[in-house]
Length: 396
Image (cartoon, rainbow, N blue to C red; front, side):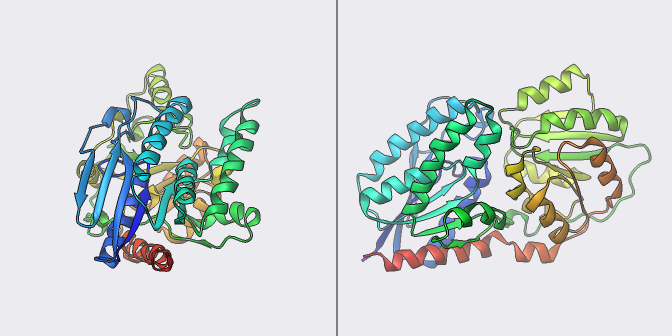
Protein backbone atom coordinates (compact mmCIF):
# COMPACT_ATOMS: atom_id res chain seq x y z
CA UNK A 1 0.00 0.00 0.00
CA UNK A 2 1.29 3.48 -0.87
CA UNK A 3 2.53 5.51 2.09
CA UNK A 4 1.50 9.11 2.62
CA UNK A 5 3.99 11.87 3.35
CA UNK A 6 3.09 15.37 4.53
CA UNK A 7 5.65 18.11 3.87
CA UNK A 8 5.25 21.44 5.68
CA UNK A 9 7.05 24.49 4.35
CA UNK A 10 5.97 28.07 4.96
CA UNK A 11 7.47 29.01 1.58
CA UNK A 12 7.19 27.08 -1.68
CA UNK A 13 7.49 28.07 -5.35
CA UNK A 14 6.54 30.42 -6.89
CA UNK A 15 7.63 32.17 -3.67
CA UNK A 16 11.20 33.48 -3.85
CA UNK A 17 13.24 32.20 -0.91
CA UNK A 18 15.94 29.71 0.02
CA UNK A 19 13.38 27.66 1.96
CA UNK A 20 11.05 27.54 -1.04
CA UNK A 21 13.74 26.29 -3.45
CA UNK A 22 14.96 23.75 -0.88
CA UNK A 23 11.47 22.35 -0.24
CA UNK A 24 10.77 21.98 -3.96
CA UNK A 25 14.09 20.20 -4.54
CA UNK A 26 13.33 17.75 -1.72
CA UNK A 27 9.85 17.02 -3.11
CA UNK A 28 11.31 16.42 -6.59
CA UNK A 29 13.93 14.05 -5.15
CA UNK A 30 11.31 12.11 -3.18
CA UNK A 31 9.15 11.70 -6.28
CA UNK A 32 12.11 10.60 -8.36
CA UNK A 33 13.15 7.92 -5.85
CA UNK A 34 9.77 6.69 -4.68
CA UNK A 35 7.49 6.88 -7.70
CA UNK A 36 4.53 4.60 -7.08
CA UNK A 37 5.58 4.13 -3.46
CA UNK A 38 4.40 7.37 -1.84
CA UNK A 39 1.86 10.15 -2.18
CA UNK A 40 3.10 13.54 -1.03
CA UNK A 41 0.96 16.37 0.27
CA UNK A 42 2.68 19.76 0.49
CA UNK A 43 1.09 22.24 2.88
CA UNK A 44 2.37 25.76 2.29
CA UNK A 45 1.15 29.34 1.81
CA UNK A 46 0.18 31.61 -1.02
CA UNK A 47 3.31 33.54 -2.15
CA UNK A 48 4.15 36.05 0.59
CA UNK A 49 7.94 36.13 1.00
CA UNK A 50 8.13 39.71 -0.21
CA UNK A 51 5.17 42.04 0.20
CA UNK A 52 6.15 43.84 -3.01
CA UNK A 53 6.37 40.62 -5.00
CA UNK A 54 3.33 38.61 -3.88
CA UNK A 55 1.16 37.06 -6.56
CA UNK A 56 -1.62 34.60 -5.79
CA UNK A 57 -1.47 31.17 -7.40
CA UNK A 58 -3.62 28.01 -7.32
CA UNK A 59 -4.90 27.04 -3.87
CA UNK A 60 -4.76 23.35 -4.81
CA UNK A 61 -2.40 21.97 -7.41
CA UNK A 62 -1.57 18.38 -8.39
CA UNK A 63 1.70 17.37 -10.03
CA UNK A 64 2.10 13.60 -10.40
CA UNK A 65 2.30 12.05 -6.93
CA UNK A 66 2.35 15.51 -5.31
CA UNK A 67 -0.63 17.57 -4.17
CA UNK A 68 0.15 21.16 -3.14
CA UNK A 69 -2.30 23.02 -0.91
CA UNK A 70 -1.69 26.69 -0.20
CA UNK A 71 -3.10 28.57 2.78
CA UNK A 72 -4.33 32.14 2.30
CA UNK A 73 -2.63 34.56 4.70
CA UNK A 74 -3.67 38.01 5.91
CA UNK A 75 -1.75 40.89 4.34
CA UNK A 76 1.48 41.30 6.28
CA UNK A 77 4.95 42.80 6.11
CA UNK A 78 8.19 41.88 7.84
CA UNK A 79 7.53 42.90 11.45
CA UNK A 80 7.60 40.30 14.23
CA UNK A 81 3.91 40.79 15.10
CA UNK A 82 2.83 40.63 11.46
CA UNK A 83 4.85 37.46 10.93
CA UNK A 84 3.38 35.89 14.06
CA UNK A 85 -0.16 36.60 12.81
CA UNK A 86 0.69 35.20 9.38
CA UNK A 87 2.10 32.01 10.87
CA UNK A 88 -0.90 31.59 13.17
CA UNK A 89 -3.17 31.74 10.10
CA UNK A 90 -1.02 29.14 8.35
CA UNK A 91 -0.91 26.86 11.40
CA UNK A 92 -4.69 26.88 11.88
CA UNK A 93 -5.34 26.06 8.23
CA UNK A 94 -2.57 23.47 8.01
CA UNK A 95 -3.79 21.72 11.16
CA UNK A 96 -7.33 21.57 9.78
CA UNK A 97 -6.26 20.32 6.35
CA UNK A 98 -3.87 17.72 7.79
CA UNK A 99 -6.69 16.44 10.01
CA UNK A 100 -8.68 15.49 6.92
CA UNK A 101 -6.35 12.58 6.18
CA UNK A 102 -3.76 10.30 7.73
CA UNK A 103 -0.01 10.48 7.14
CA UNK A 104 2.73 7.96 7.77
CA UNK A 105 5.54 10.53 7.86
CA UNK A 106 5.54 14.27 8.48
CA UNK A 107 8.46 16.34 7.15
CA UNK A 108 8.84 19.95 8.29
CA UNK A 109 11.49 22.30 6.92
CA UNK A 110 11.78 25.23 9.31
CA UNK A 111 13.82 28.40 9.69
CA UNK A 112 12.11 30.22 12.54
CA UNK A 113 11.28 27.09 14.58
CA UNK A 114 7.49 27.30 14.48
CA UNK A 115 7.05 25.21 11.32
CA UNK A 116 9.00 22.50 13.16
CA UNK A 117 6.67 22.88 16.16
CA UNK A 118 3.63 22.66 13.86
CA UNK A 119 5.05 19.53 12.21
CA UNK A 120 5.65 17.99 15.64
CA UNK A 121 2.07 18.73 16.70
CA UNK A 122 0.57 17.16 13.58
CA UNK A 123 2.87 14.13 13.75
CA UNK A 124 2.04 13.59 17.44
CA UNK A 125 -1.73 13.79 16.72
CA UNK A 126 -1.45 11.36 13.82
CA UNK A 127 1.13 9.06 15.44
CA UNK A 128 3.27 9.57 12.38
CA UNK A 129 7.05 9.49 12.05
CA UNK A 130 8.64 12.96 12.12
CA UNK A 131 11.55 14.36 10.10
CA UNK A 132 12.71 17.90 10.93
CA UNK A 133 14.91 20.00 8.65
CA UNK A 134 16.28 22.87 10.76
CA UNK A 135 17.53 25.90 8.82
CA UNK A 136 18.19 28.43 11.62
CA UNK A 137 18.80 28.69 15.37
CA UNK A 138 15.83 30.85 16.20
CA UNK A 139 16.14 30.68 20.01
CA UNK A 140 19.75 31.86 20.06
CA UNK A 141 18.94 34.72 17.68
CA UNK A 142 16.11 36.00 19.88
CA UNK A 143 18.44 36.96 22.72
CA UNK A 144 20.31 39.37 20.47
CA UNK A 145 17.61 40.57 18.09
CA UNK A 146 15.32 41.61 20.97
CA UNK A 147 16.67 43.83 23.72
CA UNK A 148 15.67 43.58 27.39
CA UNK A 149 13.13 42.99 28.75
CA UNK A 150 11.80 40.97 25.78
CA UNK A 151 14.75 38.89 24.59
CA UNK A 152 15.18 36.56 27.56
CA UNK A 153 11.47 35.74 28.13
CA UNK A 154 11.00 35.07 24.41
CA UNK A 155 14.08 32.84 24.38
CA UNK A 156 12.74 30.91 27.40
CA UNK A 157 9.33 30.32 25.77
CA UNK A 158 10.70 29.37 22.37
CA UNK A 159 13.44 27.31 24.02
CA UNK A 160 10.75 25.13 25.58
CA UNK A 161 9.05 24.76 22.19
CA UNK A 162 12.36 23.84 20.59
CA UNK A 163 13.02 21.12 23.19
CA UNK A 164 9.56 19.67 22.64
CA UNK A 165 9.87 19.68 18.84
CA UNK A 166 13.36 18.16 18.76
CA UNK A 167 12.29 15.60 21.35
CA UNK A 168 9.37 14.49 19.14
CA UNK A 169 11.52 13.98 16.04
CA UNK A 170 12.66 10.61 14.73
CA UNK A 171 15.31 12.32 12.61
CA UNK A 172 16.70 15.86 12.60
CA UNK A 173 18.69 17.42 9.78
CA UNK A 174 20.76 20.57 10.27
CA UNK A 175 21.39 22.72 7.22
CA UNK A 176 24.99 23.45 8.27
CA UNK A 177 27.65 21.84 10.43
CA UNK A 178 27.97 25.22 12.14
CA UNK A 179 24.75 24.39 14.05
CA UNK A 180 26.23 21.30 15.72
CA UNK A 181 27.89 23.37 18.45
CA UNK A 182 24.45 24.57 19.54
CA UNK A 183 22.32 21.43 19.09
CA UNK A 184 24.62 18.56 20.11
CA UNK A 185 25.24 19.68 23.73
CA UNK A 186 21.52 20.37 24.23
CA UNK A 187 20.25 17.18 22.61
CA UNK A 188 22.99 14.54 23.10
CA UNK A 189 20.59 11.64 22.45
CA UNK A 190 19.51 12.96 19.05
CA UNK A 191 21.48 12.04 15.93
CA UNK A 192 21.83 14.87 13.45
CA UNK A 193 22.34 14.62 9.70
CA UNK A 194 23.92 17.45 7.71
CA UNK A 195 22.33 17.99 4.31
CA UNK A 196 23.26 21.55 3.39
CA UNK A 197 21.87 24.01 0.90
CA UNK A 198 23.41 23.74 -2.53
CA UNK A 199 23.68 24.88 -6.12
CA UNK A 200 20.36 24.81 -7.99
CA UNK A 201 20.11 23.36 -11.48
CA UNK A 202 19.66 26.90 -12.86
CA UNK A 203 23.32 27.55 -12.02
CA UNK A 204 24.88 24.29 -13.21
CA UNK A 205 25.56 25.71 -16.66
CA UNK A 206 25.97 29.35 -15.71
CA UNK A 207 27.98 31.06 -18.49
CA UNK A 208 31.26 32.17 -16.94
CA UNK A 209 32.27 35.10 -19.12
CA UNK A 210 35.70 35.53 -20.64
CA UNK A 211 37.70 38.23 -18.86
CA UNK A 212 37.15 41.66 -20.39
CA UNK A 213 39.40 44.59 -19.67
CA UNK A 214 37.44 47.13 -17.67
CA UNK A 215 37.21 50.63 -19.06
CA UNK A 216 39.42 53.06 -17.19
CA UNK A 217 37.43 55.00 -14.61
CA UNK A 218 34.29 52.85 -14.95
CA UNK A 219 32.87 52.00 -11.51
CA UNK A 220 32.77 48.44 -10.22
CA UNK A 221 29.29 46.96 -10.48
CA UNK A 222 28.71 45.35 -7.04
CA UNK A 223 25.53 43.28 -6.71
CA UNK A 224 23.68 42.04 -3.64
CA UNK A 225 20.57 39.88 -4.13
CA UNK A 226 18.49 38.56 -1.25
CA UNK A 227 16.66 39.49 1.91
CA UNK A 228 17.16 42.93 3.45
CA UNK A 229 16.54 42.42 7.15
CA UNK A 230 18.20 42.63 10.54
CA UNK A 231 20.06 39.41 9.81
CA UNK A 232 21.81 40.88 6.78
CA UNK A 233 22.48 44.29 8.34
CA UNK A 234 22.86 45.99 4.95
CA UNK A 235 21.65 49.27 6.43
CA UNK A 236 24.72 49.16 8.69
CA UNK A 237 27.33 48.65 5.95
CA UNK A 238 26.13 49.70 2.47
CA UNK A 239 25.60 53.46 3.05
CA UNK A 240 28.99 53.93 4.74
CA UNK A 241 30.77 51.70 2.22
CA UNK A 242 29.16 53.44 -0.76
CA UNK A 243 30.12 56.83 0.66
CA UNK A 244 33.76 55.77 1.14
CA UNK A 245 34.08 54.23 -2.32
CA UNK A 246 32.32 57.05 -4.14
CA UNK A 247 32.76 56.85 -7.90
CA UNK A 248 34.85 53.67 -7.61
CA UNK A 249 31.75 51.50 -7.19
CA UNK A 250 28.06 51.28 -8.04
CA UNK A 251 25.95 49.11 -5.71
CA UNK A 252 22.88 47.31 -6.98
CA UNK A 253 20.77 45.94 -4.09
CA UNK A 254 18.00 43.56 -5.17
CA UNK A 255 15.42 42.33 -2.67
CA UNK A 256 13.05 43.32 0.08
CA UNK A 257 12.61 42.89 3.80
CA UNK A 258 12.16 44.52 7.17
CA UNK A 259 15.18 46.84 6.91
CA UNK A 260 14.62 48.04 3.36
CA UNK A 261 13.17 51.35 4.55
CA UNK A 262 16.11 51.92 6.90
CA UNK A 263 18.50 51.29 4.03
CA UNK A 264 16.48 53.49 1.66
CA UNK A 265 16.38 56.27 4.25
CA UNK A 266 20.16 56.19 4.75
CA UNK A 267 20.78 56.24 0.99
CA UNK A 268 18.44 59.21 0.60
CA UNK A 269 19.76 61.15 3.61
CA UNK A 270 23.36 60.71 2.51
CA UNK A 271 22.43 61.61 -1.09
CA UNK A 272 24.18 58.52 -2.42
CA UNK A 273 23.89 58.29 -6.20
CA UNK A 274 25.94 55.09 -6.38
CA UNK A 275 23.36 52.85 -4.67
CA UNK A 276 20.42 51.45 -6.63
CA UNK A 277 17.58 49.65 -4.83
CA UNK A 278 15.55 47.17 -6.90
CA UNK A 279 12.52 45.13 -5.75
CA UNK A 280 12.72 41.30 -5.82
CA UNK A 281 12.94 39.87 -9.33
CA UNK A 282 12.20 36.51 -10.95
CA UNK A 283 15.03 33.99 -11.20
CA UNK A 284 15.52 34.50 -14.96
CA UNK A 285 16.15 38.22 -14.57
CA UNK A 286 18.37 37.61 -11.55
CA UNK A 287 20.59 35.32 -13.62
CA UNK A 288 21.03 38.15 -16.14
CA UNK A 289 21.94 40.53 -13.33
CA UNK A 290 24.57 38.10 -12.04
CA UNK A 291 26.10 38.05 -15.52
CA UNK A 292 26.34 41.85 -15.58
CA UNK A 293 27.93 42.15 -12.12
CA UNK A 294 31.65 42.57 -11.47
CA UNK A 295 31.51 41.54 -7.79
CA UNK A 296 28.86 39.73 -5.73
CA UNK A 297 28.37 41.09 -2.21
CA UNK A 298 27.25 39.21 0.91
CA UNK A 299 26.85 40.42 4.49
CA UNK A 300 25.60 39.14 7.84
CA UNK A 301 24.98 41.40 10.81
CA UNK A 302 27.51 41.53 13.64
CA UNK A 303 25.59 39.16 15.93
CA UNK A 304 27.32 36.27 17.69
CA UNK A 305 24.57 33.77 16.79
CA UNK A 306 25.29 34.37 13.09
CA UNK A 307 28.77 32.91 13.54
CA UNK A 308 27.12 29.50 13.17
CA UNK A 309 25.18 30.39 9.99
CA UNK A 310 26.03 29.51 6.39
CA UNK A 311 24.01 31.75 4.03
CA UNK A 312 22.34 29.82 1.21
CA UNK A 313 23.21 32.70 -1.11
CA UNK A 314 26.88 31.65 -1.00
CA UNK A 315 26.18 28.54 -3.09
CA UNK A 316 24.44 30.61 -5.73
CA UNK A 317 27.18 33.23 -5.80
CA UNK A 318 30.00 30.69 -6.02
CA UNK A 319 28.37 28.88 -8.95
CA UNK A 320 28.51 32.03 -11.11
CA UNK A 321 32.30 32.18 -11.11
CA UNK A 322 32.13 35.86 -10.12
CA UNK A 323 34.40 37.36 -7.42
CA UNK A 324 32.70 37.27 -4.00
CA UNK A 325 33.07 39.90 -1.25
CA UNK A 326 31.67 38.52 2.01
CA UNK A 327 31.20 40.31 5.33
CA UNK A 328 30.81 37.22 7.50
CA UNK A 329 32.40 35.65 10.57
CA UNK A 330 32.70 32.24 12.21
CA UNK A 331 31.63 29.16 10.26
CA UNK A 332 30.66 31.10 7.12
CA UNK A 333 34.04 32.87 7.02
CA UNK A 334 35.87 29.54 7.34
CA UNK A 335 33.69 28.03 4.60
CA UNK A 336 34.41 30.89 2.18
CA UNK A 337 38.15 30.71 2.82
CA UNK A 338 38.36 26.94 2.33
CA UNK A 339 35.71 26.26 -0.33
CA UNK A 340 35.30 29.36 -2.54
CA UNK A 341 38.18 30.50 -4.72
CA UNK A 342 38.57 34.20 -5.59
CA UNK A 343 36.52 35.29 -2.59
CA UNK A 344 37.56 37.65 0.18
CA UNK A 345 36.18 37.91 3.72
CA UNK A 346 35.93 40.94 5.99
CA UNK A 347 34.49 41.36 9.48
CA UNK A 348 30.77 42.27 9.54
CA UNK A 349 30.09 46.04 9.53
CA UNK A 350 33.79 46.83 8.99
CA UNK A 351 33.93 49.40 6.17
CA UNK A 352 37.72 49.68 6.00
CA UNK A 353 38.05 45.90 6.10
CA UNK A 354 35.57 45.63 3.21
CA UNK A 355 37.60 48.04 1.08
CA UNK A 356 40.85 46.21 1.84
CA UNK A 357 39.23 42.86 0.98
CA UNK A 358 37.77 44.23 -2.25
CA UNK A 359 41.17 45.45 -3.36
CA UNK A 360 42.52 41.88 -3.06
CA UNK A 361 39.93 40.38 -5.41
CA UNK A 362 40.76 39.39 -8.96
CA UNK A 363 38.00 40.83 -11.14
CA UNK A 364 38.31 38.08 -13.74
CA UNK A 365 35.43 35.57 -13.58
CA UNK A 366 36.74 32.07 -12.85
CA UNK A 367 34.64 28.91 -13.01
CA UNK A 368 34.43 26.80 -9.84
CA UNK A 369 33.49 23.37 -11.27
CA UNK A 370 34.65 21.38 -8.23
CA UNK A 371 32.46 23.49 -5.94
CA UNK A 372 29.44 23.16 -8.22
CA UNK A 373 29.82 19.38 -8.43
CA UNK A 374 30.39 18.90 -4.72
CA UNK A 375 27.46 21.09 -3.65
CA UNK A 376 24.94 20.23 -6.37
CA UNK A 377 21.47 20.70 -4.84
CA UNK A 378 20.20 17.71 -6.83
CA UNK A 379 22.85 15.42 -5.31
CA UNK A 380 22.39 16.73 -1.75
CA UNK A 381 18.59 16.53 -1.88
CA UNK A 382 18.80 13.05 -3.37
CA UNK A 383 20.71 11.86 -0.31
CA UNK A 384 18.29 13.69 2.00
CA UNK A 385 15.32 12.11 0.23
CA UNK A 386 16.78 8.65 0.88
CA UNK A 387 17.08 9.61 4.55
CA UNK A 388 13.39 10.57 4.63
CA UNK A 389 12.39 7.41 2.77
CA UNK A 390 14.04 5.28 5.44
CA UNK A 391 11.39 6.60 7.82
CA UNK A 392 8.66 6.03 5.24
CA UNK A 393 9.66 2.38 4.79
CA UNK A 394 9.83 1.83 8.56
CA UNK A 395 6.37 3.31 9.15
CA UNK A 396 3.59 0.84 10.00
